[in-house]
Amino acid sequence: MRDGKIVILTGAGISAESGLATFRDAGGLWEHVRLEDVATPEAFARNPDTVHAFYNMRRAQAAAAAPNAAHAALARLQAAHPDTVIVTQNVDALHERAGATVIHMHGALAGALCAACDHRWAAPPEMDTTTACPACQHPAARPDVVWFGEMPYHMETIAGHLETADLFVAIGTSGQVYPAAGFVAEARRAGARTLELNLAASDVSAAFDAHEVGPASTIVPAWVH
Ligand code: BJW
Image (cartoon, rainbow, N blue to C red; front, side, top):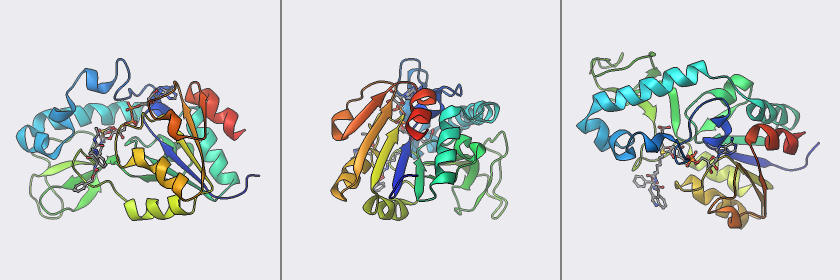
């Protein structure tokens, strides 16, 4: 049994071995599409068909993927040690499907958001520019995900957890996107020990007290054991 509160931040690397591409690795999503064309509110205003096609593809891929040993290990850890908070930047549902409870700071592919009235509902498998909001009927449905320039979700809750963390662990994230990239510094300021688990040493590895290198499906279960 572990002592103290554990706050875990996960990124695309934890789902890579489930077959979901990361963003910035070789062969990642940003090699195939420009983030400026699919992951900003301006892109959605300019060309909603392109944005819907990108997220319809991602929604289908995520639905076909299965949680891997890393997701399963974190769910086991949370069950054995309830003072474990998992914050994910991922929009897939693989943590929940493995049995964990998570905070989705960048939203979820499973959600739809009305750009006209902010109503939220379960996303259909395919969305397009005719998908109407069930509350206001406006055909302004968008994926309920957080794009560049938008405020990530649950930031006050997450800040509270970081302030009271004894151990902060970042798994499979490049540390290039804020505010998530700043969590390690916040946790350190609050007195937490910090650990990075990643396939490779990253540009931000030096910000952590310790790091383990290897595929998440191996190093996360080994850390949890
Ligand atoms: C493995 C592995 C294996 C591979 N095992 N590991 C300074 C402070 C604050 C903000 C900013 C700032 N500077 C700039 C900003 C703005 C901006 C930002 O950070 N830009 C940077 C590019 C510099 N941030 C924002 O705009 C954010 N909002 C914000 O700051 O609001 C404040 C505000 C708003 C309005 C008014 C006033 C204030 C929002 C950011 C939203 C990011 N959205 C995306 C898309 C989400 C939807 C979707 O999925 O499509 O989120 S972009 C994309 O990047 C996605 C991810 O969650 C995010 C992080 O990526 P991640 O997960 O780290 O993936 P990769 O690919 O980068 O890395 C993968 C890692 O896995 C690698 O390290 C591999 O080694 C590893 N790996 N295989 C283990 N098998």
